[in-house]
Every structure is written in structure tokens, then in C-alpha cells.
Length: 482
Ligand SMILES: C[S@@+](CC[C@H](N)C(=O)[O-])C[C@H]1O[C@@H](n2cnc3c(N)ncnc32)[C@H](O)[C@@H]1O
Image (cartoon, rainbow, N blue to C red; front, side, top):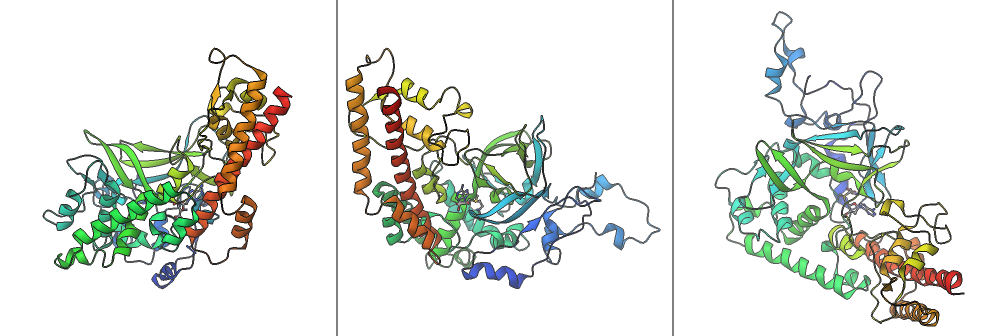
């Protein structure tokens, strides 16, 4: 099997001048299709840089350059000399509501087995082992390069993002490195939602002092790291990697919002690694994802696969689950977005009021495993039969007792419902704006920064959850307690 199938590009080829538009504050990044051609099943991303001098994407020129009298060669032997390309099957990279994303370019019937939609070889990635001794795959750092000392100075427990950011900046500076080109497809500081890039005013818009203070500490930490290593005496080959702190903080934002952690096996080594994986990092998050990642050991590839049994329609977004069991503040901290249907989100109640959890769940017909949560439709926003994630969050959030814990006393239960509702009302009243006002603000925004928008959305999502809790308790009261 040849490592470079000879596919024909079907899409526009963008010149380097057009790439530069990305950095000028506009949020556009070109879209690329990997639709199957009649004669081929795969469309490699190499085609998008077909005119670039970039070595990694150049297919072997053996056939064109070899006079016909030459003997046919052993393809396996020649394969050794060429770096592999990324392959994608029936997907398209384009801009959507959550920035760039990956979309199905054709219908996929549900299969009994997961179906591969992307394969990304190890050599295109930037990875660092999570633990000492530091190992890099591929190892692009030459012996004695001072960037290694900088990476080596980081705290193994906490500073994975600083290490990855340093490696990314180093890769941008390496002649012929894949990331020199891929960097043009990464979000610019204006396009990135990471709160590391947020101003103090934007952090205040979160109306969450804990989250704001966590972010301030992270900003400070990145800044101090830059000052420590990018001082005036630093060698030029370090200085030019990040001439100002903003460049370094942007790199940390990219590392935080695009890193994938995986256990990868390379040879006899089993490595837990922090990885920047091109193309796979274009996948957005969903709490009901249709895809997942898998490390293919035999040829050191990351596979992106569609879940077994999943039907995908042309135009559907392909998504993965970034983190499980995390509240919206964690999503904000790491990725700069929150979700109104995060089933793990919470409202923090402070009082002693508790309701009967089993009765509450029975009202919404929620039982069993997470995937099997259903409810009676009354609280669903879109009218489908699946339980809204916010209803699960409401259930999880409520301080509760169950049989054998406290005996059911209807009057006490009724009192508890009212208390919980009134605590939610008080919390809502503590916000400067209402959820309707936040929604209006979001609808009217035209030239706001992405971090400002993310901050407003975050506080709106918290209010929506509280409103859901109040409504759910209303229903509980009506149906069970009369
Ligand atoms: C790994 S990247 C995914 C690709 C990214 N959308 C882009 O434009 O390059 C993660 C970033 O995508 C955005 N994102 C991913 N999933 C999202 C979601 N469910 N809602 C809103 N934004 C999301 C956030 O900006 C996040 O920091």
C-alpha cells in the first residue's frame, strides 16, 4: 500500500497572502472538503497546500521523474523515506457557530463497528510525555537547544500547558516544520475564546469571582514564565520565539484549548502524553458526541472514529466529548465556552433544605444510566424525548434525601421545595442583569470580542440553569405534593 495515494484536489488552493487575512481580526478560515471522489475514497489535506513548498506534503515524484526504462522499485522500501500524510474520509472542515468545526460531507449509515473518519500520523503532532523524563514525539528539539532547559524548568505536575506552548512556538520557528503552515489555521488571539486572553473588564462580565480569580492567576503565571525566560539576556533563538508576552500567552491559550491527553504506545513505551494533534483539534465538543479518539498502535496514528450504531447525515457536525463530569466553570477555564445543557453543571445551595430525590426523578422519568435518561417532555427546550441536560443538572444539583435516610413528611418536603426555589430566586436577583437582558445583549452583538461574548454566555447559562431548577421544583410540587 502506498503511503501517498494520488488524490486530486477538489477545492480552492489558498495562497499565503490569503492565509494572512486570518490574523487581521476577521474570523474566516477557509473550508476544505474531504468528499470521496468517484475514483478515490479519500481526500488528503495535503491538497490544500499543493502549491506550497512545504516538504511534508510533497508526494514522492518517483513516477514523473523516473524515465520509463528504470526498474520498478519496491514501494515499501521507498515508503521509508517519506513522511505520511493525514487522511480524512467524508468530512469537511469549515466555519460554524462554534468557530471552525468538522462536518460530515455525506450520509453515514449506522454501522455495528466504529467507522474511521480521520487518521493522523504521529509525525504531524506535537507531543510531550506527561511525566519525567521528558520525551517528545516527534523529537524536534536538537540536543543542547535552550528551549529544552525552559521546558525542563517547568513543574511536572502543573505546567503541561507552558511546556506545550514552548514546544509549539519552537515548532513555528523550525525550518520546514509542519506547524509553520498549520499555524495559519489556528485561531488568532481575536478568534480564540480562551479566557487567558480576556481583559479585566471581560473577566468582570463573568460575574463569577472564583472563576475570574482563577483566570487572573493563570494569566499571571504565564506572564511570569515569559518574563523569567524571555528576558533581555536570553539567546536570540529563544527571544524570537515569543517577542512579546502576548505571543506567549496566545500559545498557552492554544495549548490549553486544543491539547488532547492520551495514553499512546510507541514501541515498547506506554506514554501518557499531552498532544497537539492537527485536524483532530478542529473537532468541537458535545455532551452527546458522535465521535471519539483512538490511538492505533501498529502504525502510530490517531484515529477519529464515528461511534458504532450512529447515523450521521450530510452536514451534521462531528463532535467529541472534551471532558466528562465537569461543570461549566471548568469548560470556561480550559476552553472558554459553556453549555446551557451541561448535565454536570450545578447550582450551589447553602441551606439545609432537601427534597426526596427518587420522587423528583420519577416526575421527570429519569432513571438508570446517563444515556438512558428520559423525561416527560415538559421541561425539554426543543420538544424531543431525550431529557434536556439541564434537567439532569437540576436533578443532580438539588440537595436530596432518599428512603431510609429521612422519613417523608409532606409538609417538610413542601417547605423544602419553597426554600430551594427562594434561594435560587435570591441568587438570580444578585446578578446585575436578567437572563432576558443577557440574551438581548448577545443577539445585538456585532463586533464584540469572542472572550466578551463567552463571558456573557457563561453568566446567562448559570441563570438559565437556576430558572430550570425553579421550574422543575414547580412541577415537582404540582405533581407530587399537590
Ligand atoms: C479544540 S478547538 C475546536 C476547533 C475550534 N472551534 C476552532 O475554531 O479552531 C476548541 C475551541 O472550539 C470552541 N468550541 C468547541 N466546542 C464548543 C462548543 N460546544 N460550544 C462553543 N464553543 C466550542 C471553543 O472556542 C474552544 O476553545
